[in-house]
Image (cartoon, one colour):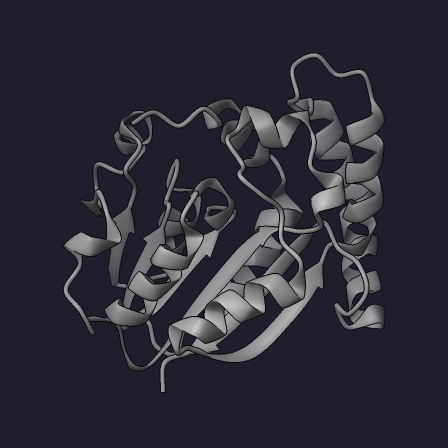
Length: 227
């Protein structure tokens, strides 16, 4: 299996504020630096490497794409969630991955099975089907999500939702504009990503706080626990 969005991941590594916001969210949710943590869809390893630098000690990756595994050589890598022992993980996070999986319901059920009692998960995905663009097609997205849709899928697995919000309010409008542009590649430029990340994203974070994640956002995140 090969992942078609390798170029896009490299570009998104330049989004310092965006990635920093996600890293802050991870640190807020992970109870202990000794927790058993899995990065589901680790990609080029950006976040798992950042967590390691912050002294989180027990990190494993799930990454089936052969062209991504070269980035993860210093970690234990599983090709599938099925290869991880049941009830062995304290925390699972999946950042912009679930939309790449055709049978997302099966993966959410696997997450439930792999978590210990009291374990948590974070799912972060693209939001709003109306924003689906050439970029989504290029990197292999099956869908973008609405809150109700993702919540129902998670609840069916037996996980209890603690939080579910839209994120990056202004990114909704930026994505809508990007969708309407006559881009041939479907990939945003490094220059545009850096500009948005430096000047627009901080304002978008402020808008998220004002709207409390209830209205709009380029992304959607959900936190759930296994009782």
